[in-house]
Image (cartoon, rainbow, N blue to C red; front, side, top):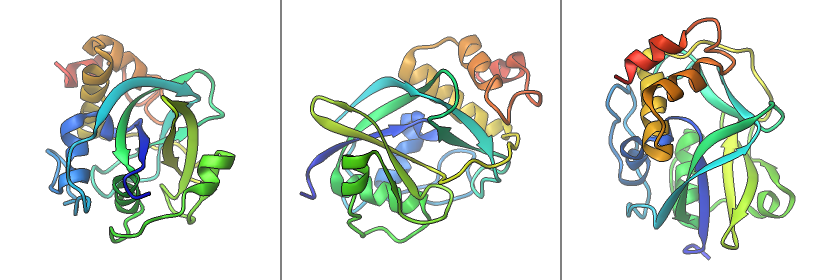
Length: 202
């Protein structure tokens, strides 16, 4: 069961492969303030693919890694959210989840409720609710977000740059398209112009 494949759907800074590698192998991402422990199994994802999922992302609370608002997924928002799916082992997914929840790695979380019913709350924290957003090739596609919406908060330039690079890398978007997409997300809207974000990706 530990080696059972699960698609982890990343919609925030983990869109960028080098940044996500810190969750797998450990390390500190460029521009970030946090060092990540890494997974018990540090191997790269078995596969990856660009995806979109129903709903959208918004920026809220304050990131201890980047400062400013951080990305959360809300399936009730209109439109579709651009994301990247990484095929991980179940144990790798659990360790990534633990790091997002700021817990020690090593716990093999029971994800049965998320897989079977589409939603599972593991705690009250920022990324402690697991959502099933689809299936691909017979494997569940899971992501995590907050259990309830939060008031919007503007993200920082380094964080937006990381997301924008991830969108460009995963989806092949131009800098202008990535900038326009991020500028329209709640929290960024009204604080960042599309051209300002595009310039960060230049």
